[in-house]
Image (cartoon, rainbow, N blue to C red; front, side, top):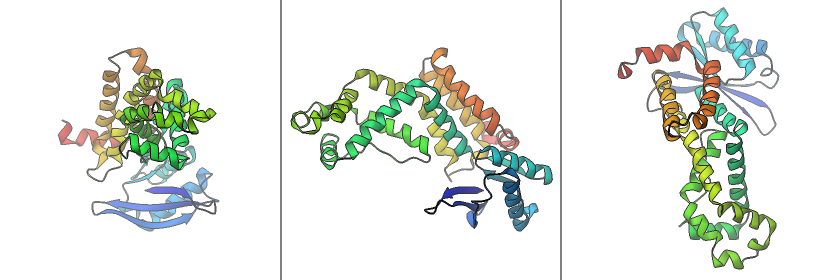
Length: 282
């Protein structure tokens, strides 16, 4: 498995991990700053790792879903026809959530408004104190597994603290404070006290939360996700449909985004084999 990140010197570092029945182990790190951009070089890097580990010991290699990795993965399978390249399920689901935000206007607007609320409050100690008072120590930000999962988890936190936020921005303490007189303060107050904002926030959560459950499953070590992801994605789609009361106009745009990513990226032979051979599902 590969895990790429950028260090403080802006170098592209790729960690190689080995997963087996004994657990997941770190193998090595590579400075891939001059490698990661082209498929040929990525293929050479992955092929060298397979050679080092031993092809007979490798069932699949898992990377992110970038085009260069996809092409390199195909090149690797062409050379070594007994192993599989598989795109990272976590990354794929994160891309689905990214598409929700970028391609569905309501999601884009609500997430932008939620970020305005959290950024404004957490920028000033006085407002954090006021928030904790009215939410009984609650927080509005919850770190997620991925970048876009965090955006939707933040919506969930806002919804959970809706009552406290409303009391905060309608309280005498707020009205008498210097914050309520500022342009940003008035803007955030209008968001929090707007019923349409909360109604639309819930609509967004209905579409995203089923996928967050799948994301937790594929990122968990509790069970091997390979044999469950087909079923989990189908259940997520059904849950989205049900949450929108089977209103095709509401759920179809989400389904289209899911299917587009699924068919192009996660519709893989090993996932199908895992589903077919899973005795719990048949």
